[in-house]
Image (cartoon, rainbow, N blue to C red):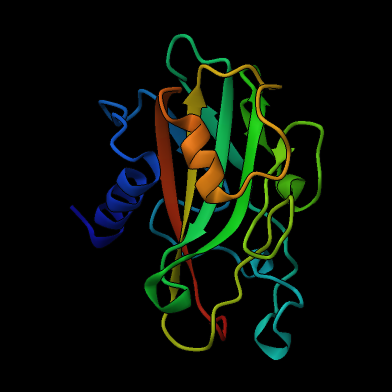
Length: 189
């Protein structure tokens, strides 16, 4: 098991608070045309302005696609977390849910702004949409993109939930999950 895979497993376990993981690879799969699991995210994914000179990206979210959701899935929830931020406490870059079961992807840049395809939660930047990475100069930070299949109707949860509030609301409603990890470093190579 690679370090990235181990980290994704541990973060998934923490997020799901004991929920069952999808059994075999390929059953419920999250992927991106913009990066493979464990690879660097493109420079354009980085934040454009939140911390000045370190933020040299364009806040263009990567394309995300998923397939083979578990039977009984009524909606999806999505989070993007940087576990390396804030002295190991982590930083939430996106919280979204209420994604209808017939939605199978987000185009590049689509989650960098509000959308009628998802209900926006509240990120660490107090945004209802994706806020790109802007780690301090030095070591790369890892970004866990995670999708959770749920048995909740897309309209069941109110807008503005935080990561912790969403985790609580999903207890007993998870059907499966999948994740991928990308990394980002400042200054970008």
